[in-house]
Figure 1 (cartoon, one colour):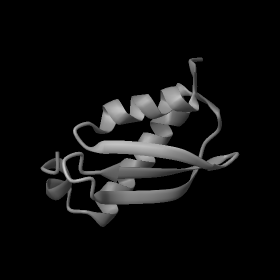
Figure 2 (figure 1 turned 90 degrees about the vertical axis):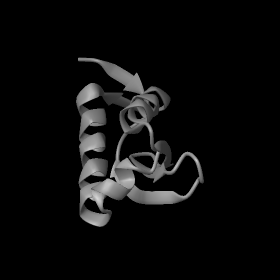
Figure 3 (figure 1 turned 45 degrees about the vertical axis):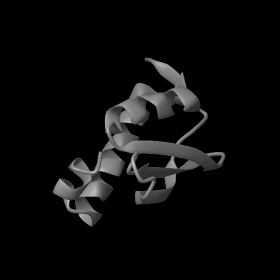
Length: 86
């Protein structure tokens, strides 16, 4: 099983969400805050707190986080607006 550190997992998520900006930080030992933003203006498009994570994660865990963020995008923002934001 592939394991990655939190910074490496964040890099994978940045690549996945490009051209949108993505940043994340751990807000507790087992959770994180993620933010998607317009890279041109810096405007936050979506912020999610309390996403379960750890300092060392399996690739499947990173995939689960990506899917959770994508579900929030679909639930709260018109997809066309987000796709055109970069």
